[in-house]
Structures are given as structure tokens and as C-alpha cells.
Length: 188
Image: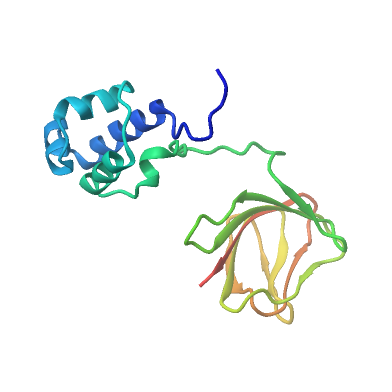
């Protein structure tokens, strides 16, 4: 079978999406079919993956289910995401023993990223100001560090949380070997 770019979303994706969204809305087949203006048997076929929906039918179903059209044609994003230790996109500092591993990039219409920080004593990781409105949140997991504004960092230990403006010069300096932290950078 050759790939046909005009073939559209796979029927199994549409079927699973329809079942998922109907269950989420707690509506029966009859209720959704009636609201969408289609036959109950048509909806049943679509949910079983044996129908061939038109764009108009899918639009009507997205309106009846009160979800964006895209939610019916794109595969569901897993609710649970696991990034194992040592995995994930990693960025190294040029000037410090500081490694940032991206754990969760900012989803559409949100403005935050989550990183796992691994740092060693030595030269601090000095950061220039980020975009206006940036706020950084740090939770220390292991070790000790001086974290926060460049001219007044605070010492934090495992379990400590610190929040500071990221739109001014700031620093992360490990003062103990094996320092690890979770950093959330948000733009408000």
C-alpha cells in the first residue's frame, strides 16, 4: 500500500478520538449523533473505525462534542510522559560545570519550560536577563547551590524552593558536588 497524502487522518485515530471525546463529555451515541445531525449508525461506524467521514461530518461532531476539530484527527498525546535519567535534550554551559536537560517544552499558548539542572562547584553559571516578564523557579534535589539574582543569590539545600525574576542578571552556583535541581522558567 502506498502512502497517499490526500488520504487524511487514519480511521483508527478518528475512531479512538470520537470514543475518547464522547466518554469525556459523558454523552451517549444517540445524544452526540442528534447534536451533530447525523445518524446514530453513522457515528457507531465511525467509532468502530469502519466509516469514512467527510470533513463536514467531523466538523459537526467537533461542535457537538465541544472540542477543536484537530482533536478528532490527531493522535492523542499520552497523559503520562517519562524521561529517564540521562535522557532528553541536553545543553551544556561553555563557562561552568552546568548542564540543563529539557524535561518539558512549552506547549502552545503557554510560556514555560522545565529543566533538570546538573551542576558542579567551580565557576558559577551566570545568566544574562531573559525576555521581560520571565520568572524562574528552582527546587534543589541534591547538593547545595547559590541561586537567584547575581548581586544577591541565596543558598539553597535539598527541598528548598527559590523564585526570582529571570529578566535581570541571575546566577546558579553549585557549592557542593553532585548538585541537582529542577528549574521552571516561565514568561508571565
